[in-house]
Image 1 (cartoon, helix red, strand yellow):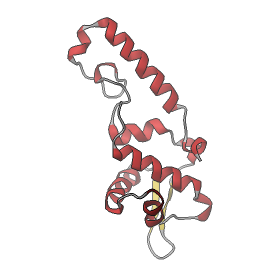
Image 2 (tube, rainbow, N blue to C red):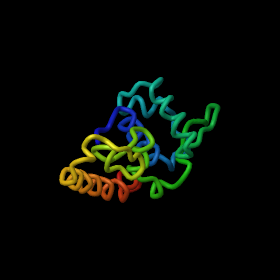
Image 3 (tube, rainbow, N blue to C red):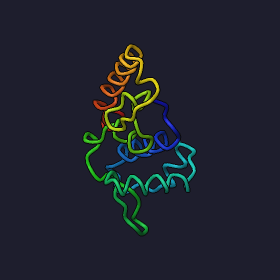
Image 4 (cartoon, helix red, strand yellow):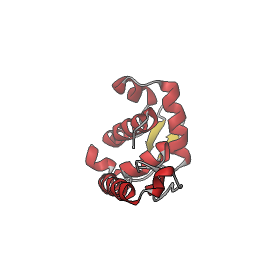
Length: 133
């Protein structure tokens, strides 16, 4: 598993929104300024997050973005899967994105990679945004 900028930016933005959710809707400019992120790129990611029901939007002067569900109900694993796909080091040991690979022929390496997948998944599936704020 390697995080791309999609996952990194999405996680940073969601953590920022969760941290400031008492302030109401958050402006994208505030997030971009805090983390020095591209506004255009973050807008593309917010489209994905909105369509997947992780954030809500509001137009107008008082508008912006807020979480669509409690921060304690959003795991790091689900955001990474949404943005980057499998948590597993190879698709031949992935739960959600399984696909046979050439490594599937070697049972011992598959067992090691499955253990790595299980460790990563356990950590990230039990880590919520709320724990990161």
